[in-house]
Image (cartoon, rainbow, N blue to C red; front, side, top):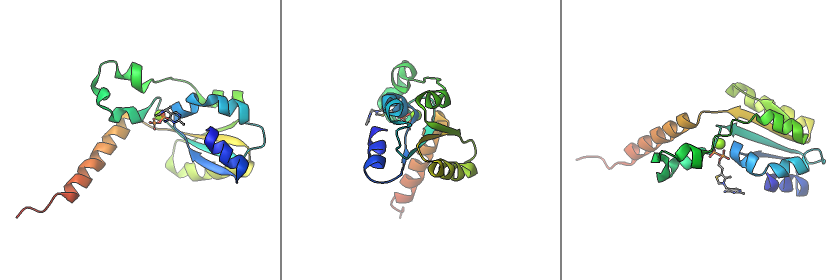
Length: 141
Ligand SMILES: Cc1ncc(C[n+]2csc(CCOP(=O)(O)OP(=O)(O)O)c2C)c(N)n1
Ligand SMILES: [Mg+2]
C-alpha cells in the first residue's frame, strides 16, 4: 500500500491491486495516509488469507491454515472506515469497473473489496496449468 500511495503522491491518481493480507500487513500505511489528499484506489481480492502460499509444498502440512494461510476473518470495511478510507464491496464481476470508477472520481484513498474463494483459486490455477501443459505436449507420432 505504501508504494502505491507513494506513486499517487509523486505522480498521479493510482489504482493498485492489493491482497487482503497485504492490506492488513501494511495497514499502518492506510491509517496514516487515508484522508491526507492522496488519490489511490486499491482493488482488494479478499480470500481471507494468503492464497499465494497454497502453491508452496507446505500446503500439504496439517498446520498449513494456521501458520501459512492465516485466515483473519476481519471486516475490511470496518478497518477502512476506521482509517478514514472509502470502501465498497463488489460481489458481481459487472460491478467492479463502475465501483473503481466511482472511487477514482470521488478522490482520496479507497478499497474496492472483491470476495473470492481461496480453494477455488488453487483449482483454477491447476486447470490452467494442465491446459497449458497439454497444449505444449509434443504431438505423438
Ligand atoms: C511489500 C511486501 N510486504 C510484505 C510481503 C510479504 N508477503 C508475501 S505474500 C503476502 C500476503 C499474500 O496474501 P494476500 O495479500 O492476501 O494475497 P493472495 O495471495 O491471497 O492473493 C505478504 C504479506 C511482500 N512480499 N512484499
Ligand atoms: Mg488473500
